[in-house]
Image 1 (tube, protein in one colour):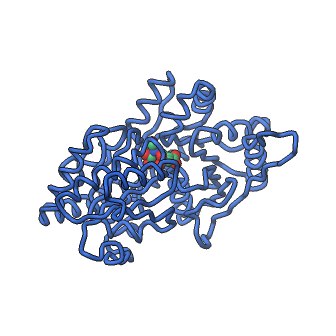
Image 2 (spheres, rainbow, N blue to C red):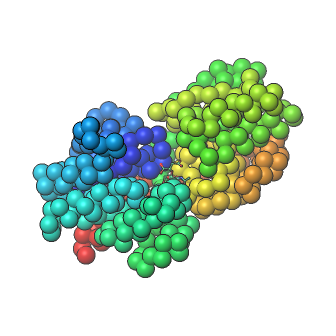
Image 3 (cartoon, rainbow, N blue to C red):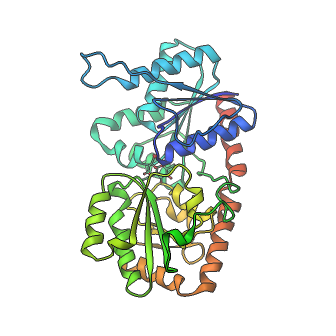
Length: 373
Ligand code: GMT
């Protein structure tokens, strides 16, 4: 097949899924065309069957807000015509599904089929905005096929947007060879020179990630044992978390690593991964940690219970229950046998339920179904 992946290129779950899916499909022999405003950050090196088309946004002085959606639609149409695309796969409803629809309309019949994958915040945050809600619903209804990354997200979308069509659940996935306990490790002593335990969190540091909760958890754990918190990412809540760490007197043990392109090399270094989010449709970062053999302390929110089994490969608590999360972390960290068992269980879950080789064919099958009408 000839498939276009329309996605955000920045560090974020939807762009990661689009990139991993695209490169995996290319390995299966499909031609994959990435379309975005810059090259997706995980699209490193040369891949056979992979192409990249950059969307140029006109800076005409009349435009206070250059119309990216239109430029994207024009680029999708251009690529669709030139390469006779079969599928345009829009990752994230806004604006990608709408731009794909517009591209098809501009082609006046024929053209590729549109598959839209809902990732989470396009429904739970952006989609809630009254100015976007109708557009999100329209994008979902006008796509030829729609998938969601968890059962939770599919059900919530159906209910909140009064969707009558089927939304197929295709879980996110991980390359278990690359994200492996055997992956080239970071040098543990570099971050924990005195044998401290390592807690890790990776995200875009936005409000829903509750970054400050990770600092609260560290402060409680540190009352009982030496520990450090490695924070991977960048975003608006960084400063507030830093101020809290100072207030709680743990700032020397909070290490900001910035955005990292190869997080697989860091994850195996952590004893526990923290994801105390207030919204999370799936939690790809948690899955990647689990694949590296790192258990996850997270919340019972959204799709996280579909990924993490409480007491087996991680622990789940109510949003904001930093007390519960810290005492679970301590229990695990003080019990080597338990930690080892959870490490194995986390890896096993990734290998048996969310491995790339299992999930990518589900997308291929879905494309075939959509093409078959
Ligand atoms: O919140 C993020 O991490 C970014 C966001 C995105 O769209 O880039 O992530 C969403 O999509 C990921 C990939 O499907 C999911 O794993 C995340 O759970 C989801 N984020 C939220 O629902 C908050």
